[in-house]
Image 1 (cartoon, rainbow, N blue to C red):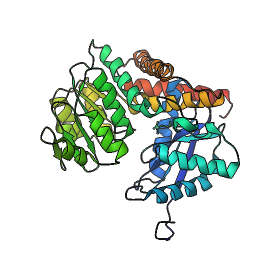
Image 2: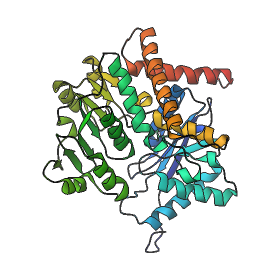
Image 3: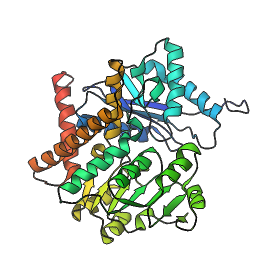
Image 4: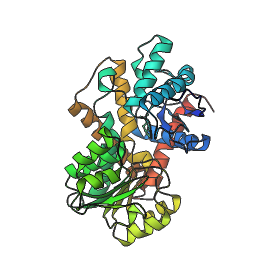
Length: 381
Ligand code: GLU
């Protein structure tokens, strides 16, 4: 029911893809583009991503075509409550454990967790991940997808005796994944020269001021154009064109699916890109992936490179199950070990199957094998 007391109808989905390795696990996306096909492809990817982490989590995904943009705080709360009123009966800490994704962060998860608790009369912390620190969340979960993607790219770079230091980096998006990708890149000496949102992109040759960007995005819920206005002459805002036209050595697409096309990949290659890490789920089109592989660009597919988010969700589930709360250092160390493990598993599998350096093939086979072995062991087929 919106603020004018009108009933609004949205469609919600939860696709429970595979639970051979553990409870269904994967985020919820609120975006007007969401339809069943979106959630199915995301759930399919999630299953193999989760398997690659080596943690006991199956795969699923959910969401709704609800558009949070322009909605009041109360409208968001009521939508989250309505959504959970229907979803609640399908989930549980041993059954299916949703988290956030595009349009769903700590605020939305809070309203959903509150509704679940009201309905079930259970403080079942492990039913959702990505929770706030004061109500069962894990340290590092907010940073995890971005940090993890940077660790993954760091591992790929190391295979060619390279690192982030002094490199020009483009990170598309300006949401949670993008912001913490930028933060980690900057801490390793990389220079973030461009980022974007659905209204355009900004270029700042001297490097984007991350504290200001965080202030604009996280606290004011603003746009990258607001950042440009506040920052002044050192930054250019471009409402049209492609962020991938900016010459850079490393690209980390961290917004949404199909945001980097074959043409964009050609431009990046021409401009000397050496590594691409997918922070988002399937941001590169199949054409773009082919072009990167043909040109020997180090390419980290999302199901490997962005697995740090869901892996830290699994760490949150561990803390919830033992009613414990780990320090930032302990949790980040676990995340880093997991990302190194995923990288090495993909690289070794690629070697084994005669395609050294092909992380796409390595991730697909290694993820698939782990799911298939569990399915077989459980006697499902
Ligand atoms: N939405 C994130 C992903 O695509 C996180 C899912 C989770 O933590 O369950 O992997």
